[in-house]
Length: 152
Image (cartoon, rainbow, N blue to C red; front, side, top):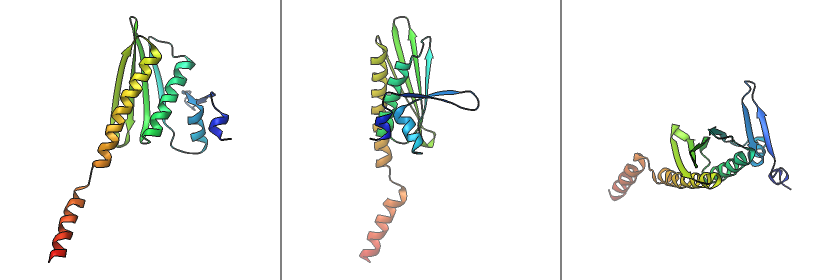
């Protein structure tokens, strides 16, 4: 049985020397033990208490995002409440100091979190395609010069 399956449904609390507390989902904790890249996940509640169920939901979505795009260094999730509507904002810090932001608003908190995570996934998919399609300028000129040398 894998470590992730053995630890399913378990959350871990890690405390840093400067008394910052991090909640880790079991899958992220297993990656930490295997010394893989661990996502720095921060969940902030504005006018809302962030319950363990909300943290677990966010951690599961963050794990899916990291499986989809592994160059996320940090993810800040800000959950707020204004009147009767809930707001969720996902801020992903990527390589090369790029930042991607996705926001959603709705009546149900968990549906709002899922909607914001879906928007972020769509934006990351486009970002990843742009990275893949980007070609250095040297490749195009090398191909032209190589063809000219073969013709001579």
